[in-house]
Image 1 (spheres, one colour):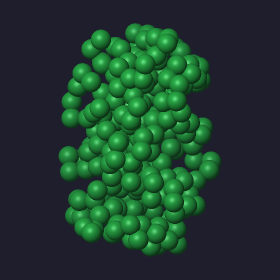
Image 2 (tube, one colour):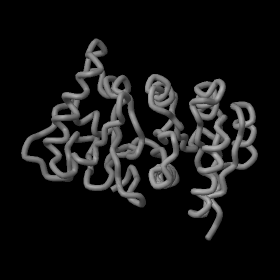
Image 3 (cartoon, rainbow, N blue to C red):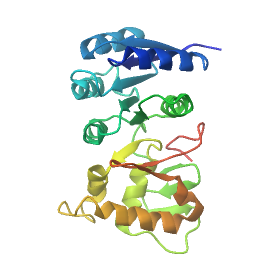
Length: 234
């Protein structure tokens, strides 16, 4: 089994050592960095498949911004390691380009699931007409849902929110990001919480497929797919 290099940046050495042991059973080689500067240097040196950034790290959000700005790491998936009460920092990190979160303290099963999603995740190469994930497929040009079959059409806002959620799937979005999904249909003055109304409608209209839209508590939403299906292609 080939070794999977992953980088973790954080201050809680005990948690990170536990995470390293848990992931080693899955073929992951976890490199640990103690701060943002060390993390950035190690990211360039070891070319990790994914990067975990603890929100307890000094200037954690600055690190996320730098990772997204540098060509060597711009497309590397970033997960935020967050504790309860850090929802504001999570929102800021997602808006800077992180793809999701890993809850602390570490739960071994959840940690591996999130890491697997990160390893399968990729940014779309460019604008594509047909996008989707799992049971959902959209035609962006005609703004229609190809699957599943719907009894009731989506509104323009609902379509754009769903398009964001599935391209790429597995990524968490804040409510503020989803408010901006379609400015023409969703004016900037709209309250962020109005996204919840559109999500509820989407879940209803999509039926069983709507169950894939998961709530990220106090943050926003994500579209979950089985590992191996995470893609922006049908």
